[in-house]
Length: 105
Length: 112
Image (cartoon, rainbow over all chains, first blue to last red; front, side, top):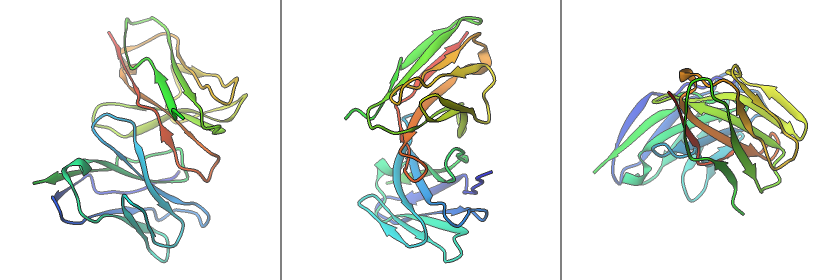
Protein backbone atom coordinates (compact mmCIF):
# COMPACT_ATOMS: atom_id res chain seq x y z
CA UNK A 1 0.00 0.00 0.00
CA UNK A 2 1.85 3.07 -1.30
CA UNK A 3 0.80 5.48 1.45
CA UNK A 4 1.85 9.10 1.50
CA UNK A 5 0.98 11.81 4.00
CA UNK A 6 0.64 15.44 3.01
CA UNK A 7 -0.86 18.44 4.79
CA UNK A 8 -4.37 19.08 3.46
CA UNK A 9 -3.81 22.75 2.69
CA UNK A 10 -1.20 25.48 2.56
CA UNK A 11 -1.22 29.19 1.78
CA UNK A 12 1.64 31.01 0.14
CA UNK A 13 2.23 34.64 -0.74
CA UNK A 14 2.92 35.44 -4.36
CA UNK A 15 6.65 35.66 -5.06
CA UNK A 16 7.62 33.66 -2.00
CA UNK A 17 8.88 30.09 -1.97
CA UNK A 18 6.35 27.36 -1.29
CA UNK A 19 7.68 24.28 0.50
CA UNK A 20 5.38 21.28 0.27
CA UNK A 21 6.20 18.31 2.49
CA UNK A 22 5.36 14.68 1.90
CA UNK A 23 5.92 11.72 4.18
CA UNK A 24 6.52 8.38 2.47
CA UNK A 25 8.07 6.37 5.28
CA UNK A 26 7.20 2.98 3.73
CA UNK A 27 8.83 3.66 0.38
CA UNK A 28 10.99 0.83 -0.91
CA UNK A 29 14.59 1.32 -1.90
CA UNK A 30 14.16 1.35 -5.65
CA UNK A 31 10.98 3.38 -5.94
CA UNK A 32 11.00 6.91 -7.25
CA UNK A 33 9.05 9.73 -5.63
CA UNK A 34 6.85 11.60 -8.09
CA UNK A 35 5.11 14.93 -7.74
CA UNK A 36 2.09 16.09 -9.73
CA UNK A 37 -0.22 19.05 -9.59
CA UNK A 38 -3.86 19.42 -10.55
CA UNK A 39 -5.17 22.83 -11.46
CA UNK A 40 -8.91 23.15 -10.89
CA UNK A 41 -10.52 20.09 -12.50
CA UNK A 42 -7.91 19.47 -15.16
CA UNK A 43 -5.95 16.23 -15.41
CA UNK A 44 -2.96 16.06 -13.04
CA UNK A 45 0.29 17.25 -14.53
CA UNK A 46 3.71 15.75 -13.83
CA UNK A 47 6.15 18.12 -12.10
CA UNK A 48 9.28 16.27 -11.04
CA UNK A 49 10.59 12.99 -9.67
CA UNK A 50 13.62 11.69 -7.82
CA UNK A 51 15.17 8.63 -6.24
CA UNK A 52 17.67 9.79 -3.63
CA UNK A 53 19.38 12.89 -4.94
CA UNK A 54 17.91 16.36 -5.01
CA UNK A 55 16.44 17.31 -8.35
CA UNK A 56 15.63 20.57 -10.08
CA UNK A 57 13.84 21.42 -13.29
CA UNK A 58 12.18 24.49 -14.76
CA UNK A 59 9.09 24.00 -12.62
CA UNK A 60 10.36 23.08 -9.16
CA UNK A 61 13.02 21.56 -6.94
CA UNK A 62 12.75 18.29 -5.05
CA UNK A 63 14.58 17.60 -1.81
CA UNK A 64 14.61 13.98 -0.61
CA UNK A 65 15.85 13.15 2.87
CA UNK A 66 18.80 10.82 3.18
CA UNK A 67 16.62 8.04 4.64
CA UNK A 68 14.12 8.62 1.79
CA UNK A 69 11.20 8.68 4.19
CA UNK A 70 10.13 12.16 3.25
CA UNK A 71 10.55 14.77 0.56
CA UNK A 72 9.81 18.43 -0.03
CA UNK A 73 8.68 20.03 -3.25
CA UNK A 74 9.86 23.61 -3.56
CA UNK A 75 8.19 26.16 -5.81
CA UNK A 76 10.87 28.86 -5.67
CA UNK A 77 8.78 31.90 -6.62
CA UNK A 78 5.10 31.06 -6.34
CA UNK A 79 2.70 32.72 -8.76
CA UNK A 80 -1.08 32.86 -8.75
CA UNK A 81 -1.03 30.18 -11.45
CA UNK A 82 0.58 27.78 -8.98
CA UNK A 83 -2.69 27.57 -7.06
CA UNK A 84 -3.51 23.87 -7.37
CA UNK A 85 -3.63 20.54 -5.55
CA UNK A 86 -0.21 18.94 -5.31
CA UNK A 87 0.20 15.17 -5.02
CA UNK A 88 3.25 13.17 -4.10
CA UNK A 89 3.23 9.56 -5.13
CA UNK A 90 5.42 6.50 -5.06
CA UNK A 91 4.88 2.96 -6.21
CA UNK A 92 2.51 4.34 -8.81
CA UNK A 93 -1.13 3.29 -8.76
CA UNK A 94 -2.36 5.00 -5.61
CA UNK A 95 -2.61 8.72 -4.96
CA UNK A 96 -3.30 10.39 -1.64
CA UNK A 97 -5.53 13.40 -1.09
CA UNK A 98 -2.76 15.89 -1.86
CA UNK A 99 -2.15 19.43 -0.58
CA UNK A 100 -4.35 22.30 -1.71
CA UNK A 101 -2.00 25.24 -2.26
CA UNK A 102 -3.48 28.70 -2.51
CA UNK A 103 -1.17 31.47 -3.67
CA UNK A 104 -2.39 34.91 -2.64
CA UNK A 105 -1.39 38.33 -4.01
CA UNK B 1 1.95 13.90 -30.34
CA UNK B 2 -1.44 14.34 -28.69
CA UNK B 3 -0.59 12.50 -25.45
CA UNK B 4 -3.64 10.93 -23.75
CA UNK B 5 -6.99 11.69 -25.35
CA UNK B 6 -10.30 11.05 -23.59
CA UNK B 7 -13.76 11.20 -25.08
CA UNK B 8 -16.37 12.38 -24.39
CA UNK B 9 -15.54 15.37 -22.18
CA UNK B 10 -19.01 15.50 -20.65
CA UNK B 11 -21.88 13.03 -20.47
CA UNK B 12 -25.19 12.74 -18.66
CA UNK B 13 -26.55 9.22 -18.22
CA UNK B 14 -29.81 7.96 -16.85
CA UNK B 15 -29.77 5.29 -14.15
CA UNK B 16 -29.38 1.87 -15.72
CA UNK B 17 -27.91 3.08 -18.99
CA UNK B 18 -24.52 1.95 -20.18
CA UNK B 19 -21.66 3.73 -21.88
CA UNK B 20 -18.00 3.45 -22.79
CA UNK B 21 -15.44 6.06 -21.91
CA UNK B 22 -12.74 6.14 -24.53
CA UNK B 23 -9.03 6.60 -23.86
CA UNK B 24 -6.23 6.50 -26.39
CA UNK B 25 -2.55 7.41 -26.17
CA UNK B 26 0.04 7.90 -28.90
CA UNK B 27 3.21 7.66 -26.81
CA UNK B 28 3.62 3.88 -27.09
CA UNK B 29 3.21 3.57 -23.33
CA UNK B 30 2.62 0.03 -22.16
CA UNK B 31 0.97 0.95 -18.85
CA UNK B 32 -2.48 2.54 -18.75
CA UNK B 33 -4.80 3.43 -15.87
CA UNK B 34 -8.31 4.59 -15.08
CA UNK B 35 -9.01 6.78 -12.07
CA UNK B 36 -12.14 8.42 -10.76
CA UNK B 37 -12.22 11.63 -8.76
CA UNK B 38 -15.24 12.61 -6.71
CA UNK B 39 -15.76 16.30 -5.84
CA UNK B 40 -13.10 17.56 -3.43
CA UNK B 41 -11.46 14.16 -3.20
CA UNK B 42 -8.31 12.48 -4.46
CA UNK B 43 -7.85 9.98 -7.25
CA UNK B 44 -9.06 6.41 -6.84
CA UNK B 45 -7.78 3.68 -9.12
CA UNK B 46 -10.46 1.71 -10.96
CA UNK B 47 -8.49 -0.55 -13.31
CA UNK B 48 -5.06 -0.63 -14.83
CA UNK B 49 -3.22 -2.49 -17.57
CA UNK B 50 0.46 -3.33 -17.97
CA UNK B 51 0.13 -4.20 -21.65
CA UNK B 52 -2.20 -5.32 -24.40
CA UNK B 53 -4.36 -8.21 -23.24
CA UNK B 54 -3.55 -7.70 -19.54
CA UNK B 55 -5.80 -5.87 -17.09
CA UNK B 56 -6.12 -5.81 -13.32
CA UNK B 57 -8.46 -4.34 -10.74
CA UNK B 58 -7.68 -1.28 -8.69
CA UNK B 59 -9.31 -0.25 -5.42
CA UNK B 60 -12.80 0.61 -6.80
CA UNK B 61 -13.52 -1.74 -9.76
CA UNK B 62 -17.16 -2.59 -9.00
CA UNK B 63 -19.57 -1.46 -11.71
CA UNK B 64 -16.85 -1.09 -14.34
CA UNK B 65 -15.14 -3.21 -16.97
CA UNK B 66 -12.10 -2.64 -19.16
CA UNK B 67 -10.36 -4.21 -22.09
CA UNK B 68 -6.94 -3.66 -23.67
CA UNK B 69 -6.83 -5.08 -27.16
CA UNK B 70 -4.18 -2.64 -28.41
CA UNK B 71 -1.33 -0.70 -26.85
CA UNK B 72 -3.01 2.59 -27.71
CA UNK B 73 -6.55 2.09 -26.42
CA UNK B 74 -7.96 1.40 -22.96
CA UNK B 75 -11.76 1.88 -22.89
CA UNK B 76 -13.73 1.88 -19.64
CA UNK B 77 -17.23 0.39 -19.72
CA UNK B 78 -20.09 1.22 -17.35
CA UNK B 79 -22.81 -1.40 -17.72
CA UNK B 80 -25.61 -0.24 -15.41
CA UNK B 81 -25.03 3.36 -14.47
CA UNK B 82 -25.78 4.34 -10.87
CA UNK B 83 -25.78 7.79 -9.21
CA UNK B 84 -22.72 6.70 -7.20
CA UNK B 85 -20.77 6.66 -10.46
CA UNK B 86 -21.20 10.39 -10.90
CA UNK B 87 -17.60 11.54 -10.98
CA UNK B 88 -14.76 12.82 -13.13
CA UNK B 89 -12.86 10.01 -14.82
CA UNK B 90 -9.20 10.33 -15.72
CA UNK B 91 -7.20 8.03 -17.94
CA UNK B 92 -3.41 7.98 -17.65
CA UNK B 93 -0.47 6.19 -19.19
CA UNK B 94 3.17 5.62 -18.36
CA UNK B 95 6.20 3.97 -19.87
CA UNK B 96 6.64 1.01 -17.59
CA UNK B 97 7.22 1.25 -13.89
CA UNK B 98 9.94 3.86 -14.13
CA UNK B 99 8.05 6.52 -16.01
CA UNK B 100 5.80 9.30 -14.80
CA UNK B 101 2.10 9.40 -15.58
CA UNK B 102 0.61 11.41 -18.41
CA UNK B 103 -3.05 12.15 -17.75
CA UNK B 104 -5.89 12.91 -20.08
CA UNK B 105 -8.15 15.92 -19.57
CA UNK B 106 -10.94 13.83 -18.05
CA UNK B 107 -14.57 12.88 -18.66
CA UNK B 108 -17.16 14.47 -16.41
CA UNK B 109 -20.00 11.98 -15.95
CA UNK B 110 -23.33 12.66 -14.27
CA UNK B 111 -25.81 9.86 -13.61
CA UNK B 112 -29.38 11.00 -12.93
